[in-house]
Amino acid sequence: MPCLNEAETVATCVEKALRALHDEKIHGEVIVADNGSTDGSQGIASRAGARVIHVRERGYGFALMQGIAAATGEFIIMGDADDSYDFLEVPRFVAKLREGFDLVQGCRLPSGGGTIVTGAMPFLHRVWGNPIFSFLAQRWFHAPLHDVYCGLRGFRKDFYESLDQRCTGMEFATEMIIRASLRNRKISEIPITLHHDGRRSHAPHLRTFRDGWRTIRLFLLFSPQWLFFTPGLLFVLLGILGYGIALPGLTISGVTFDAHTLLFASLAVLCGYQSIIFAIAGKTFAIQAGFLPEDYYLKMFFKFVDLERALIVSLLVLVLGGGLLVTAIFQWQATGFGRLDYAHTMRLVIPGATLIALAIQTIFSGFFVSILGLARR
Image (tube, rainbow, N blue to C red; front, side):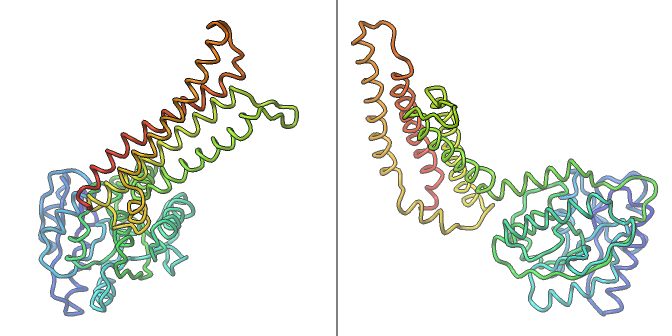
C-alpha cells in the first residue's frame, strides 16, 4: 500500500488485508510504503500490523517500486490506503494468480461488471477519463481490460521484475498494463466495488488534468505509430496531393493553385517525412531499451531498407534535385541574370530544393538509425 498522509484510513486497510490473509490461510504480509507522511501514518500502520518502509523519493510510482522491491512473496497485491478498495477481496486476486495469470486487474466500471458507489468517483473520471483511456489501451495495445486506472490489482513478482518499469508518478499503474499487453502476458480482470474515499482531512492525491496528460503522454510514447508515423504519413500524402494540383497550375472552382501552393506542399512533405523518420528511430530505440517488444513490421522494414540502400537512393535523389536547380540557373542565365518568370522557375526550384532536403534527411537519419540498430544486428 503506497501511503502519504493516510492516518484516517491506513489502519482500516491494513486490518482488512490481514484479516483476509488469516481467514483464507494465505501466508503473506502487509507492507506500507510511506512516501513522507507528516500525520503519523507510519506509526498507525505499524501498530495495525503492517511492515512500514520509508521511501524518500516522492511519487506514487516510487512508493510502489520500493514497496514491491521490499516484498518477499511470490504474489503482490497492490492497492491504495484510502479505504476506497475493500482488501477483504484479496483472496479473489490470489486465486486468479494461482490459476497462472501474470496480472489480475480490478475493474470498477460497469462496462466490466464493476460497481461504483454513488459519489465515489468524480463524474469526469467516471464518464470520460477512465472509459477513454481504457478504450485506447484496448485499441492501441490490445489490453483485455475495461478499467486501466484501477489501483487494486495483483501480479506475480517475477512478472513485475521482467517489465522493467520506469514511470514514477500516477501513470505507474497504466505503464504496467501497457507493458504486459505488449508482451502478451496472461491478464485477467475481476469486477470490484469502488467505495467512498475515507479521508476527510485532505483531497485525493490524483490530479485530474495533470495525471490525465501524463497518461496520454505515456500512451503516445509507447505508440510512435499514432504519435509520429500516422500523422507524418498524412502530411506526406497531403503534400503529394498539393504537388499534383500545383505543378500543372490547376484551377479548381475558380481557385488557381500556383507556386505558393508548392511551398505549402513542400513544407507538408518535409515535416511529414521527418515525423516518419522519427517514428522509426523512436521505435528502434524503444525496442533496444526494452520499452517495447520486437516488432515484426520493423524487422521487415530493416530487412529491405538498410543504410547502403538508403545512401544509394539518397544520392540519386540528390542528383535529381540538383539537376532541377541547375536547370533553373540556366534559365536565369538565359535572361542575362535578369528578372525571371517566378511562377515558371519556382516549379523547378521548389521541387529541387525539397528533393535535396529529403535526401540529406535520409542520409543523416540513415546513419542515426543504423547506430541505434547496431545491437539489433
